[in-house]
Length: 79
Ligand SMILES: [Zn+2]
Image (tube, rainbow, N blue to C red; front, side, top):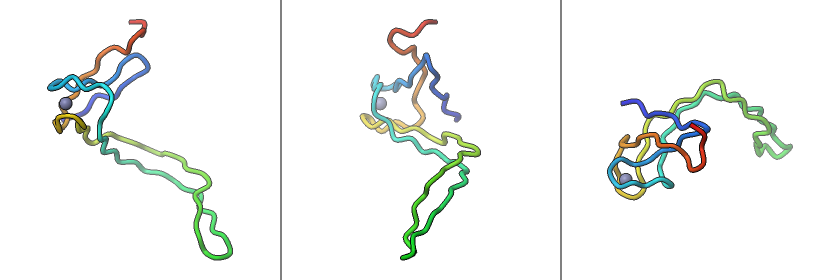
């Protein structure tokens, strides 16, 4: 099942319990990182360029339902 992505005017809502605010999001992404190592060899990522990104699943933190989210309008959003 594909999880619908929220937009500027919409947000997730758990269809089972109504949770609007807390989710565990499993996301896969392909990124290019500019890694800068100091003289001791400790790395710091100074830039991160996201090439592609997709949401694999969303779990509700309240009732543990997986991928049971729908999109609802955000408060004040112009439809
Ligand atoms: Zn829920």
